[in-house]
Every structure is written in C-alpha cells, then in structure tokens.
Image (cartoon, rainbow, N blue to C red; front, side):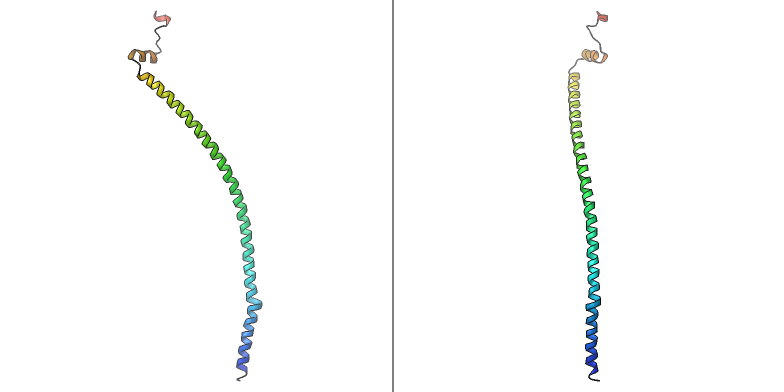
Length: 115
C-alpha cells in the first residue's frame, strides 16, 4: 500500500501535466489567436471608416472655407451699405427744413412748372 500512494500521486500529477500541455494550453492559444484575428479584422474596418471620415472632414473643411469667404464678402457689403447709410443720414441731418422738404418731396426750384 505504501508503494501505491506515491505511484498514484505521480500518475495524477503526470495526468494533470499532460492535460495542461496537450489540451488546456493549446485551447487558450487558439482562443488567443482567434482574438488577435478578430481584432485585426476590426482594426481594418476601423481604418476604412477612418479614411472615409477623413475624406468627409476634408469636404466639410472646403465647404467651411467657401462659407467663410461668402461671409467675409457679405460683411464687406454690409459695411459698405452702412457707410452709405451713415453718409446719407449725415447729409439729411445737416439739411434745413426747406432742403428736407425739397429732398423728400422731390421739389425742384428750377422746374419749369414753378417759374
């Protein structure tokens, strides 16, 4: 009996070792390799999406630049119109009552009807 206990213990340890070496560890490596393959495939998909998003960003940047140019042109136009309005307002503010009457009534003293 004393001989069987160490022999069974050694056999049990050898069985667990063989189980680990030939079954559990290779399965973990397969799972690990499958995970790597899946992650590489996802990485390729994400690279494609990233490239398409980069192209979309470039298009949006071009549109933004065009819109900025239009805004700058519109601001210049608005500024010119405001300057013209200020000039007209200043000239109207400097007019006398008779000049204002003539300006708004389009009354001309040199017209032939009033001579």
